[in-house]
Image 1: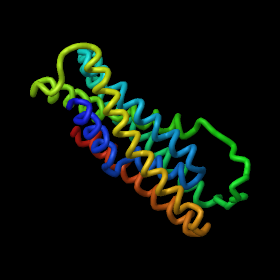
Image 2 (image 1 turned 180 degrees about the vertical axis):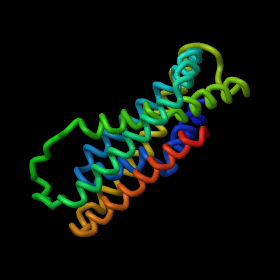
Image 3 (image 1 turned 90 degrees about the horizontal axis):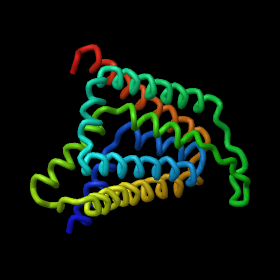
Image 4 (image 1 turned 90 degrees about the vertical axis):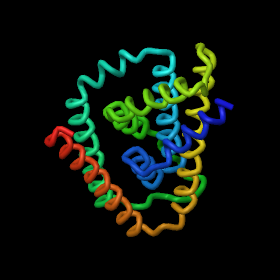
Amino acid sequence: MFILIGFLIGFMAAVPVGPVNIYIISQTLKRDFFHGMMAGLTTALLDLTYCLVALVGFFHISVNITNYGYWLKIAAGVVLLFLGLKLFHDAKVFKFGVREKDAVIIKSPRPLLGVFLLYISNPSLYAFWIAVAGFVTAHGLLREGFWPAVFFALSCGLGAMVWYFFLVRIVSHYQAKIQENTFKKLLWVLGIMLVGFSLFTFFKVLTGK
């Protein structure tokens, strides 16, 4: 039962539109299914790790990190701003290369690094997984012990991975049907959304919220 609960939590936590989802979509559009899925798998792995850390009782790690919430928010704003401006630049210079199925794809670790920076600089994600750990333990949905925590965290990661697979698959499916100008407009829109998240983050820093 707790495995199903973990799967649903991981899946639903990944669904809301936010910086990570936007970044994964942009990588799929700019590159291909592989790079988008690499970013999605990285996020799912980070979800799994944070969930497991919270469940096994290392709450002091998260508490100590939240003491640096001010600086983490600034870092998150800078990362979001940088990625948003990068999308603006990509929208200007983007051109379709060879789109045939047998084209050679140059694989890059950039999507992995980008989503990693987005994740670790977001203080709310620490709080979310601590809240999840508190909820499932307080309501008796998860037995105490290391292995139940491991399987619950794995199920959360699997739920997130399933969402990202469907997201990237849908985007890559329509990628071949999108014209170059439409691609550029989509990259502009995604860049505006990331910059918007960045400005919102800086606003929260300035207002102390």
